[in-house]
Length: 397
Image (cartoon, rainbow, N blue to C red):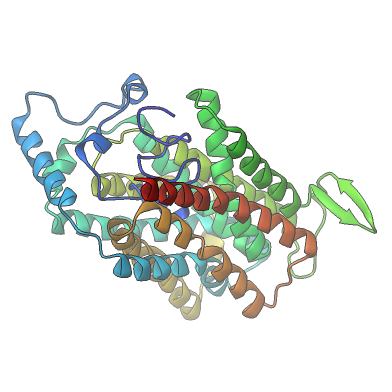
């Protein structure tokens, strides 16, 4: 571990090795931080991640001290936080279902690129919401004084592209596969942290990561059981009447996981930046990235064919899965300890899977089910172990 951060480089007090989809908004899991938590480690400084204020800027220091003081004195309302996190995770879990309503009637070719446009709309609404929060919390001055760094930009770009790939994935493969594959993000984040930051991976953590990796191979069909025998390999031509481009959808789901892990890796830097300030920048660069992706992929044919019903679904996606889900995420982050926050966030998985089963009549194959359980189990295990360890230490004291 380095400088008080987790071994995958997430902000202090997040679960070791495993962040959650809530990280898309770019703020620390636990907003109730101390001054020590907000300081950078030496590694952060080495990567040009310097605070946006200088020692001589007394005005900025005063604003920051005041903000830190008010945050530190805040008393968490766990009941409110739990309800907010459940609502947020539910909103996140509805992305696939609402996206399908948005794209009903579109050609398969349009569905493969429409994710960039829908992600752009979601990120833009999120940006407007966080700007509103910035104004309400009177942090505009802090925003102007905060220095923008490459890792802040890259984190936003990566999460924007991740969500674009994820939405397209939910349209081209089963929702279960899409949500399972984006949750491989922590695996790739851990590998990046090990390679570039030389962060250690314990034996136990390595086992959990291996479970996620095997689960990923099973989910996208690289490891499969056909006709009573084990097969290894990826058949890109495989399809079904329901999902003509299923393998491409699975690959986009995996790519969303890779980009999600990359985003979490970049989120490990600039711990000095205020949560709301980083959220604004995160959404700005995510919206910018998805706009550029839309210009490249040209989803305009699909967008032009939207009916009034399609646009109603799109607005629902932007509001429910964007503004409301991410707004409740802010409330949850302020009122829940990291362990509870992380655990409840996994509610997104059953919500997404149940929507696929009930609304869309999808079926989970035995191999896909095992793969999904390995991914979710590998992600939840360190959270649960961390909670048990903390509880035992508290009881000993």
